[in-house]
Length: 61
Image 1 (spheres, rainbow, N blue to C red):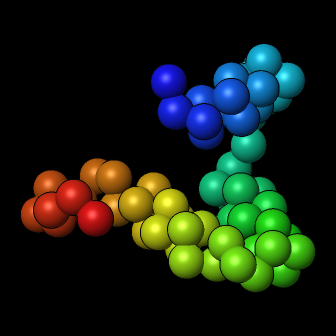
Image 2 (tube, rainbow, N blue to C red):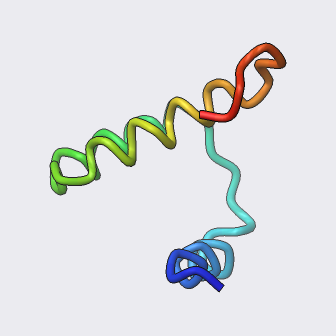
Protein backbone atom coordinates (compact mmCIF):
# COMPACT_ATOMS: atom_id res chain seq x y z
CA UNK A 1 0.00 0.00 0.00
CA UNK A 2 1.28 3.42 -0.93
CA UNK A 3 1.12 6.28 1.56
CA UNK A 4 -1.25 8.11 -0.83
CA UNK A 5 -3.73 5.24 -0.54
CA UNK A 6 -4.74 6.54 2.90
CA UNK A 7 -5.79 9.87 1.45
CA UNK A 8 -7.57 8.19 -1.44
CA UNK A 9 -9.41 5.91 0.97
CA UNK A 10 -10.44 8.90 3.10
CA UNK A 11 -11.66 10.73 0.00
CA UNK A 12 -13.72 7.72 -1.01
CA UNK A 13 -15.22 7.24 2.44
CA UNK A 14 -16.04 10.92 2.99
CA UNK A 15 -17.10 12.00 -0.50
CA UNK A 16 -17.49 8.82 -2.51
CA UNK A 17 -21.22 9.27 -3.04
CA UNK A 18 -20.86 12.79 -4.47
CA UNK A 19 -20.78 13.66 -8.14
CA UNK A 20 -18.49 16.44 -9.35
CA UNK A 21 -17.62 18.03 -12.66
CA UNK A 22 -14.14 18.35 -14.05
CA UNK A 23 -14.65 22.11 -13.87
CA UNK A 24 -15.15 21.82 -10.11
CA UNK A 25 -12.12 19.53 -9.83
CA UNK A 26 -9.98 21.99 -11.81
CA UNK A 27 -11.03 24.82 -9.47
CA UNK A 28 -10.08 22.71 -6.43
CA UNK A 29 -6.70 21.82 -7.96
CA UNK A 30 -6.00 25.51 -8.65
CA UNK A 31 -6.95 26.43 -5.08
CA UNK A 32 -4.73 23.64 -3.74
CA UNK A 33 -1.73 24.84 -5.78
CA UNK A 34 -2.35 28.43 -4.67
CA UNK A 35 -2.09 27.25 -1.07
CA UNK A 36 0.70 24.71 -1.76
CA UNK A 37 2.89 26.00 -4.61
CA UNK A 38 5.45 23.24 -4.03
CA UNK A 39 2.90 20.78 -5.43
CA UNK A 40 2.46 22.60 -8.74
CA UNK A 41 4.36 20.00 -10.79
CA UNK A 42 2.61 16.90 -9.38
CA UNK A 43 -0.81 18.55 -9.74
CA UNK A 44 0.03 19.55 -13.32
CA UNK A 45 1.06 15.96 -14.07
CA UNK A 46 -2.13 14.57 -12.55
CA UNK A 47 -4.30 17.04 -14.47
CA UNK A 48 -2.53 16.23 -17.73
CA UNK A 49 -2.85 12.50 -17.10
CA UNK A 50 -6.57 12.84 -16.39
CA UNK A 51 -7.06 15.00 -19.49
CA UNK A 52 -5.36 12.43 -21.73
CA UNK A 53 -6.83 9.18 -20.35
CA UNK A 54 -8.71 8.45 -23.58
CA UNK A 55 -5.85 9.35 -25.93
CA UNK A 56 -4.95 6.07 -27.60
CA UNK A 57 -1.90 7.53 -29.35
CA UNK A 58 -0.26 8.84 -26.18
CA UNK A 59 2.29 6.77 -24.29
CA UNK A 60 2.14 6.71 -20.51
CA UNK A 61 3.01 10.16 -19.18
